[in-house]
Length: 222
Length: 222
DNA sequence: TCGTTCTTGACGGATTCCATACGGCCGCGT
DNA sequence: ACGCGGCCGTATGGAATCCGTCAAGAACGA
Image (cartoon, rainbow over all chains, first blue to last red; front, side, top):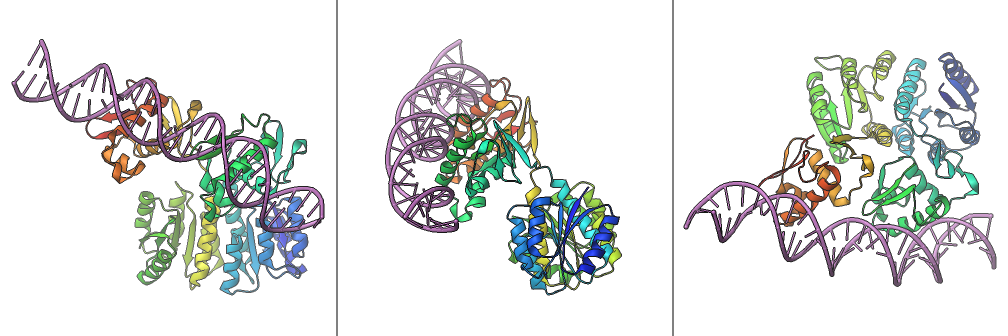
């Protein structure tokens, strides 16, 4: 069942949305401000977030950024402000759709369906991956056996582990983790790959899961 | 570069959209009716389709169904009709977003970005090619049976495999892989073709899939 | 200030690429 | 039949590049 987190500071609208979504057999949680929205999202892992921009505590765009820092969960934004700059900011921050109040509830539900349909087509990535002796939890950002990774190490490992068996080019890793202007600085990759293998491989000198493809990039082999 | 197919029957709007998209470095093709839209989509394989619902020949929703029959390419719908039932029909038919005319061009572009960002995140589907006993994955850069290729070997194999059955001239291979100034160095081709056959053909001395056409070039036969 | 993380440099060793050489096959003219 | 040249396949050694690792300084936050 699809889990939806609805974030809005108007109790009346919140209630109306909840009733309509529950009637369509969605599982619903609600939040009244940005802080509790981020907290609930981290704990509950909703499949979709409906977010009102006009929250009392945090700016809506910052909430989007906060979510996008660790999850790709689709975000549908609601807003009373219909100016195009608001829409552009929200969409570019990482929102998937933008609905202006007042809106038809049926249209809103159709957009929910469209966005979550698009997402479930892609949703194949598991939250937990086995890497040799260690079990890696992508959501909780933890690894069995008391292994701790630095932020950069996590970033690299996530990219590799999310594409099991596939080659990840040096260019892709560098632009994702450091930015496109670091495309030439391959020594970062060597440095951090050594670190990752030291922490995760049984024999770091002869890696089994974090494989290098000379001249091209690296590959995670389950 | 992202390829966008724009479908609209108003030449003026078509022109405005094309100019704006080209200015943002998209590659753009246009169609004026549903039939040519479906034809161009099948031939050109755009990364995104912008579709006006009010076409002269085919109903817009049927165009969406036609596209969804064989591709998951994102579709952004434009429409003059702002009724919610139109939006619901289009979205449920498989559209990814719905923009009502008149619209702000910047908002339109932001929605294009949002939709195609969501799509490229998911676009990991393997493109597999069968080559005798081996299955070649062009995206993950993997080959069944533990076969590993060097960067140059991959480069050559990709060019051959992407044009199955077609002759690839020596000139074309050399300019693509080594650069146009290496057009005379045909011994590179012999060198690497030997390597590829050694790794991929069952009997490298009598190749079945990587065929040489004397005096012309090479050919991949599935 | 301390501890952690990120950057940067340097060097031996592994991998890949380049360059050359040699042998086989085929068509052609003598 | 024979030699010859053009074209292709294969082998091999050295050059160039790329990679793993250690170590130390810089930047950052508690």
